[in-house]
Amino acid sequence: MGGFLLRKVGAALVVLLLASVLVFLGVRAIPGDPAIALGAENRDPAVLAAIRHKYLLDRPLPVQYAHWVWLALHGDLGTDQRDLPVAHTIVTRLPITLELAILSMLLAIAIGIPAGVIAATRRGKPSDYAVTTSALVGLSVPHFWLGLLFIVWFAVDLHWLPASGYVTVHHPVANLEHMLMPCVVLATGLAAILMRQMRSSMLTSLGADYVRTARAKGLSERSVIWRHALRNSLITVTTVIGLQLGGLISGVVVTETIFGIAGFGELTVEAVNQRDYTLIQGVVLVAAAGYVVVNLAVDIVYSLLNPRIRAAGARS
Amino acid sequence: MSTVDATALTSPRARRRVLLRKRFLRRPMAVGGLVVVVVLVVVAALAPWVAPYGSGATDFTSILSHPSSKHLLGTDELGRDELSRLIWGARASMQAGFLATVLAMIVAVPIGMVAGYYRGWVDTVIARLTDVLLAFPFLILAVGLAAILGPSLKNATLALGIASMPGLIRIARGETLSLREEDFVPAAIANGANDATIIFRHILPNMTSTLLVQATLTIPGAIIGEAVLSFLGLGVQPPTPSWGVMLQDAQSYLSQDSWLAVYPGLAIVIASLSFNVLGDGLRDIFDPRTTR
Image (cartoon, rainbow over all chains, first blue to last red; front, side, top):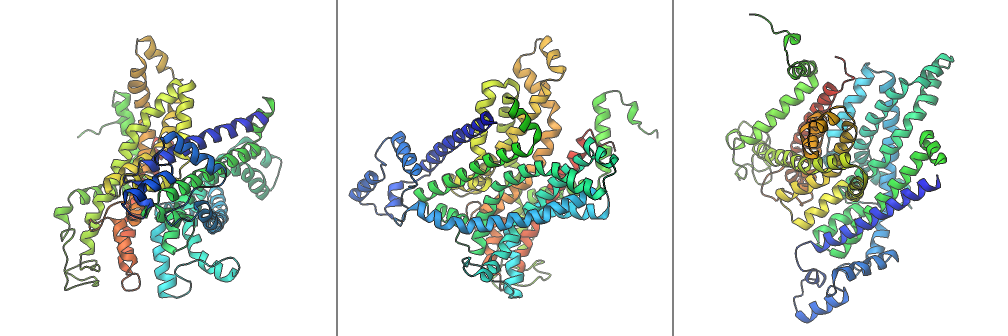
């Protein structure tokens, strides 16, 4: 098990290192002189030279990269165009996005998993068709459009919910009011994916030998489904949930833009639109790092849940 | 008139084709998906002849007007015919959907096959590089690339193509890993085939069904991706119509004319739903476990 963990962590570190190189080179590949962008379009040669010197832009790329990584490891991602520390901006924006992501994920799990189980246990019946059809629709509806429709219906027409903005958790009711629409929007696509995955892995589990054994032992159908088949299906679904986090981050970018939530996603779009190099660099690096770490955690949880992998790890 | 009996066909390939067609026609959803896909492609291709008005034609006498016989779906804030813009916008969506997928396939499939065929260090290197690309969430990668390359439909397509590659590399690799253990590989080696021949003449044809399904399911992702990028201002640039651009325009007029936000979204849903349904149908008919 220790060797397995070490291998996984090592691979994640290599990926992270290569990803950081890619981010660094990618930002350098953005057309235009970063010194001009950093200097707020001031083209005075003396100012540009000073900026180049300050941001090490006059040094070779490997030096710039090493310097950037070294500072990043110490939590310093440089300063953006407005001279604000990037790391601090990200840290203040991140909790908002995490709240949005976690609430959406919980909502998607609460809908997707039971719906998938129902569809699998009533295969071919009307409830199965209802679940599979709504999953298909959920997959095909673009989040941002659903967001616009929600704003039209629930904010503009009915005045039930605020159209945009974010209120801190210190005002729980207002906070949830602002979070409700974005969460539902983000959860639709996720719930659809979870439903489909849950249904197919439940169908596999229900056809497996251990389920036949459980039935032969005379266990109630309820116990067979919920205690035996579901537990094994959840192993696959855990992985899918982890893999969907990438999709969730993508969804957050658009959803926050539509609902005017000043989180990490909106920051990403803002950074790109303003061609703020240090900000783009920091945001993309943090997104990639977060994603890699979560996937590593999923891998580890998966191996802890799956007795076969656990046993293989113990043997080696 | 004699009827053609499927079993009377001599070549196994022809027999399989008949079987697949039979299975496909028994799935009304998939057939419907195919019909809608074909209609969308034809409408997009024939936009100059099908659309009632030009893509940028303005009618200042009717601004934000309701549906009428003159403008079937009404007009937008500049008096442009909504239906015509939807039809012209289909071009951007179809172009992004198909070209991004073709690009991703052309690059990803050979890479995945090489990794799966040679295994060893080649596989490890490719797997790590794929992991690196996978470390960037789809939209972050696409947004980043659009930022590097500049906003345009061509660059958005390129970005979506690159962002679709990692998944396809993994699928091609997995398929090759299992296909290279099949008996036809030693048989081809005995016949004196080199690696390239084995990979492209023997293994590739055996994974076409998987790739076809995957392509059909990659297209809707790229269609939605194009809409998102254009909506964020990183794809098609106004005044060129695209469903994403139309939604962005509509965002400013939500309280005056919310229908402007409904039509382009419905178009995206119809397009991606029909590709998804078609892809699911194709997966079912190619699946050997499906007996019908």
